[in-house]
Figure 1 (tube, each protein chain N blue to C red):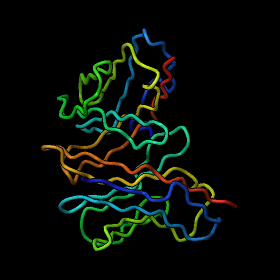
Figure 2: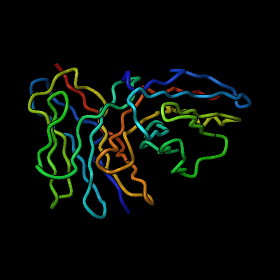
Figure 3: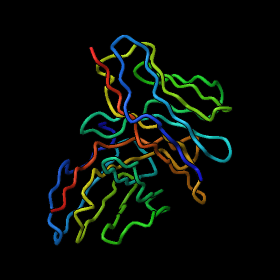
Length: 115
Length: 115
Protein backbone atom coordinates (compact mmCIF):
# COMPACT_ATOMS: atom_id res chain seq x y z
CA UNK A 1 0.00 0.00 0.00
CA UNK A 2 2.92 2.42 0.29
CA UNK A 3 2.80 2.82 -3.49
CA UNK A 4 -0.37 4.90 -3.28
CA UNK A 5 -0.99 7.08 -0.23
CA UNK A 6 -4.08 9.00 0.75
CA UNK A 7 -4.63 11.73 3.32
CA UNK A 8 -6.45 12.18 5.52
CA UNK A 9 -7.45 8.63 6.43
CA UNK A 10 -10.55 9.85 8.22
CA UNK A 11 -12.54 13.06 7.72
CA UNK A 12 -15.68 14.35 9.38
CA UNK A 13 -17.23 17.44 7.88
CA UNK A 14 -20.41 19.45 7.99
CA UNK A 15 -22.52 20.06 4.95
CA UNK A 16 -21.29 23.64 4.59
CA UNK A 17 -17.58 22.85 4.90
CA UNK A 18 -14.99 22.78 2.16
CA UNK A 19 -12.34 20.11 2.37
CA UNK A 20 -9.94 18.31 0.08
CA UNK A 21 -8.77 14.72 -0.20
CA UNK A 22 -5.23 14.09 -1.36
CA UNK A 23 -3.75 11.13 -3.19
CA UNK A 24 -0.11 10.58 -4.10
CA UNK A 25 1.35 7.70 -6.08
CA UNK A 26 5.01 6.73 -5.92
CA UNK A 27 4.88 4.18 -8.75
CA UNK A 28 5.71 6.37 -11.72
CA UNK A 29 2.26 5.80 -13.18
CA UNK A 30 0.52 8.03 -15.70
CA UNK A 31 -3.13 7.41 -14.84
CA UNK A 32 -5.04 8.07 -11.63
CA UNK A 33 -8.59 7.34 -10.50
CA UNK A 34 -11.12 8.29 -7.84
CA UNK A 35 -13.66 5.74 -6.64
CA UNK A 36 -16.49 5.89 -4.13
CA UNK A 37 -17.17 2.81 -2.00
CA UNK A 38 -20.46 2.76 -0.13
CA UNK A 39 -21.76 -0.03 2.06
CA UNK A 40 -23.49 -2.81 0.16
CA UNK A 41 -22.80 -1.22 -3.23
CA UNK A 42 -20.20 -1.94 -5.91
CA UNK A 43 -17.32 0.45 -6.27
CA UNK A 44 -18.31 3.49 -8.29
CA UNK A 45 -15.76 5.04 -10.61
CA UNK A 46 -15.89 8.82 -10.29
CA UNK A 47 -13.01 10.28 -12.30
CA UNK A 48 -10.09 9.14 -14.42
CA UNK A 49 -7.02 11.19 -15.27
CA UNK A 50 -4.32 10.33 -17.76
CA UNK A 51 -1.23 12.53 -17.97
CA UNK A 52 -3.05 15.17 -15.93
CA UNK A 53 -6.01 15.29 -18.33
CA UNK A 54 -9.45 14.18 -17.22
CA UNK A 55 -10.63 11.37 -19.49
CA UNK A 56 -13.65 10.13 -17.57
CA UNK A 57 -16.30 11.86 -15.52
CA UNK A 58 -19.02 9.48 -14.49
CA UNK A 59 -21.91 11.90 -13.95
CA UNK A 60 -20.53 12.96 -10.61
CA UNK A 61 -22.28 15.90 -8.88
CA UNK A 62 -20.45 19.21 -9.12
CA UNK A 63 -19.95 19.29 -5.37
CA UNK A 64 -17.05 16.92 -6.09
CA UNK A 65 -14.27 18.65 -7.99
CA UNK A 66 -11.11 16.77 -8.97
CA UNK A 67 -7.71 18.26 -9.63
CA UNK A 68 -4.61 16.61 -11.04
CA UNK A 69 -1.67 19.05 -10.97
CA UNK A 70 0.84 16.39 -12.06
CA UNK A 71 0.90 12.67 -12.71
CA UNK A 72 1.83 11.88 -9.10
CA UNK A 73 -0.87 13.84 -7.31
CA UNK A 74 -4.64 13.79 -7.40
CA UNK A 75 -7.03 15.83 -5.30
CA UNK A 76 -10.75 15.66 -4.69
CA UNK A 77 -12.19 18.97 -3.54
CA UNK A 78 -15.39 18.69 -1.55
CA UNK A 79 -18.00 21.44 -1.16
CA UNK A 80 -21.51 21.46 0.36
CA UNK A 81 -21.73 17.70 0.58
CA UNK A 82 -24.77 15.71 1.61
CA UNK A 83 -24.98 12.98 4.28
CA UNK A 84 -25.39 10.37 1.51
CA UNK A 85 -21.90 11.29 0.32
CA UNK A 86 -20.49 9.58 3.40
CA UNK A 87 -18.37 6.71 2.11
CA UNK A 88 -14.85 5.40 1.65
CA UNK A 89 -13.12 7.31 -1.14
CA UNK A 90 -10.43 5.31 -2.86
CA UNK A 91 -7.69 6.54 -5.11
CA UNK A 92 -5.93 4.26 -7.58
CA UNK A 93 -3.23 4.53 -10.21
CA UNK A 94 -2.12 2.52 -13.22
CA UNK A 95 0.83 2.65 -15.57
CA UNK A 96 -1.34 3.79 -18.44
CA UNK A 97 -4.84 3.26 -19.80
CA UNK A 98 -3.81 0.59 -22.29
CA UNK A 99 -5.39 -2.79 -21.65
CA UNK A 100 -2.11 -4.54 -20.93
CA UNK A 101 -0.78 -1.87 -18.58
CA UNK A 102 -3.83 -0.55 -16.76
CA UNK A 103 -3.81 -2.80 -13.71
CA UNK A 104 -4.91 -0.49 -10.95
CA UNK A 105 -3.22 -0.17 -7.58
CA UNK A 106 -5.24 1.32 -4.77
CA UNK A 107 -4.53 3.53 -1.81
CA UNK A 108 -5.95 2.83 1.66
CA UNK A 109 -8.84 5.23 1.23
CA UNK A 110 -10.30 8.18 3.11
CA UNK A 111 -13.29 7.42 5.31
CA UNK A 112 -15.56 10.45 4.90
CA UNK A 113 -18.47 11.21 7.20
CA UNK A 114 -20.78 14.11 6.36
CA UNK A 115 -22.88 15.35 9.25
CA UNK B 1 -25.13 -4.74 -20.59
CA UNK B 2 -21.59 -5.43 -19.47
CA UNK B 3 -21.44 -6.63 -15.92
CA UNK B 4 -19.83 -8.87 -13.37
CA UNK B 5 -21.64 -10.89 -10.74
CA UNK B 6 -20.52 -12.45 -7.51
CA UNK B 7 -23.44 -14.65 -6.54
CA UNK B 8 -22.41 -15.23 -2.93
CA UNK B 9 -22.42 -12.46 -0.33
CA UNK B 10 -20.39 -14.63 2.02
CA UNK B 11 -18.35 -17.81 1.84
CA UNK B 12 -17.45 -19.74 4.97
CA UNK B 13 -14.66 -22.30 4.99
CA UNK B 14 -12.61 -24.06 7.62
CA UNK B 15 -8.89 -23.40 7.81
CA UNK B 16 -6.95 -25.87 5.72
CA UNK B 17 -9.85 -26.61 3.39
CA UNK B 18 -9.93 -25.49 -0.24
CA UNK B 19 -11.86 -22.34 -1.00
CA UNK B 20 -13.69 -21.03 -4.06
CA UNK B 21 -15.11 -17.55 -4.54
CA UNK B 22 -17.33 -17.37 -7.60
CA UNK B 23 -17.47 -14.75 -10.33
CA UNK B 24 -19.32 -14.63 -13.63
CA UNK B 25 -19.14 -11.91 -16.23
CA UNK B 26 -20.95 -10.54 -19.22
CA UNK B 27 -18.83 -8.52 -21.63
CA UNK B 28 -18.52 -8.09 -25.37
CA UNK B 29 -15.23 -9.16 -26.86
CA UNK B 30 -12.38 -10.83 -25.03
CA UNK B 31 -12.54 -10.13 -21.29
CA UNK B 32 -9.80 -8.79 -19.09
CA UNK B 33 -10.60 -10.10 -15.62
CA UNK B 34 -9.25 -9.19 -12.22
CA UNK B 35 -9.45 -10.21 -8.57
CA UNK B 36 -8.82 -7.80 -5.71
CA UNK B 37 -8.90 -8.31 -1.94
CA UNK B 38 -9.82 -5.74 0.68
CA UNK B 39 -8.91 -6.13 4.33
CA UNK B 40 -10.79 -4.08 6.96
CA UNK B 41 -10.05 -0.35 6.80
CA UNK B 42 -7.70 -0.85 3.88
CA UNK B 43 -7.76 -0.21 0.15
CA UNK B 44 -8.06 -2.89 -2.50
CA UNK B 45 -5.03 -5.06 -3.16
CA UNK B 46 -4.45 -6.58 -6.59
CA UNK B 47 -4.37 -10.39 -6.53
CA UNK B 48 -4.27 -11.52 -10.15
CA UNK B 49 -5.55 -10.89 -13.64
CA UNK B 50 -6.38 -12.75 -16.83
CA UNK B 51 -5.76 -11.16 -20.21
CA UNK B 52 -4.94 -14.04 -22.50
CA UNK B 53 -3.10 -17.33 -22.51
CA UNK B 54 -3.30 -20.08 -19.91
CA UNK B 55 -6.77 -20.36 -18.38
CA UNK B 56 -5.31 -20.95 -14.93
CA UNK B 57 -3.82 -17.76 -13.53
CA UNK B 58 -1.65 -17.75 -10.44
CA UNK B 59 -1.53 -14.74 -8.18
CA UNK B 60 -0.45 -13.43 -4.81
CA UNK B 61 -0.72 -15.26 -1.46
CA UNK B 62 -1.26 -18.66 -3.11
CA UNK B 63 -4.46 -17.67 -4.88
CA UNK B 64 -5.31 -18.74 -8.41
CA UNK B 65 -8.25 -18.25 -10.72
CA UNK B 66 -9.60 -20.27 -13.59
CA UNK B 67 -10.96 -18.58 -16.68
CA UNK B 68 -13.78 -20.55 -18.29
CA UNK B 69 -14.98 -18.98 -21.51
CA UNK B 70 -17.93 -21.31 -22.10
CA UNK B 71 -19.29 -20.66 -18.62
CA UNK B 72 -18.21 -16.99 -18.61
CA UNK B 73 -16.70 -17.52 -15.19
CA UNK B 74 -13.52 -16.55 -13.40
CA UNK B 75 -13.64 -18.25 -10.01
CA UNK B 76 -10.99 -17.54 -7.39
CA UNK B 77 -9.48 -20.56 -5.68
CA UNK B 78 -6.96 -21.56 -3.06
CA UNK B 79 -6.05 -25.14 -2.16
CA UNK B 80 -5.73 -24.55 1.58
CA UNK B 81 -7.38 -21.57 3.29
CA UNK B 82 -5.78 -19.57 6.09
CA UNK B 83 -7.57 -17.59 8.79
CA UNK B 84 -5.65 -14.56 7.52
CA UNK B 85 -7.40 -14.93 4.14
CA UNK B 86 -10.60 -13.66 5.75
CA UNK B 87 -11.44 -10.48 3.85
CA UNK B 88 -13.68 -8.97 1.18
CA UNK B 89 -12.96 -10.16 -2.36
CA UNK B 90 -13.87 -8.30 -5.53
CA UNK B 91 -14.00 -9.58 -9.07
CA UNK B 92 -13.74 -7.00 -11.84
CA UNK B 93 -13.91 -6.90 -15.61
CA UNK B 94 -12.34 -4.29 -17.84
CA UNK B 95 -14.66 -2.62 -20.33
CA UNK B 96 -14.05 0.10 -22.87
CA UNK B 97 -15.66 3.49 -22.35
CA UNK B 98 -14.81 5.45 -25.46
CA UNK B 99 -11.08 4.99 -25.77
CA UNK B 100 -10.62 4.43 -22.06
CA UNK B 101 -10.70 1.13 -20.27
CA UNK B 102 -12.44 1.06 -16.93
CA UNK B 103 -13.14 -1.61 -14.35
CA UNK B 104 -16.61 -2.77 -13.44
CA UNK B 105 -16.57 -4.40 -10.02
CA UNK B 106 -18.81 -7.04 -8.55
CA UNK B 107 -20.50 -6.38 -5.25
CA UNK B 108 -17.90 -8.33 -3.33
CA UNK B 109 -17.85 -11.60 -1.42
CA UNK B 110 -16.87 -11.80 2.22
CA UNK B 111 -14.66 -14.77 2.88
CA UNK B 112 -14.69 -16.06 6.44
CA UNK B 113 -12.08 -18.68 7.31
CA UNK B 114 -12.62 -20.29 10.69
CA UNK B 115 -9.90 -22.02 12.70
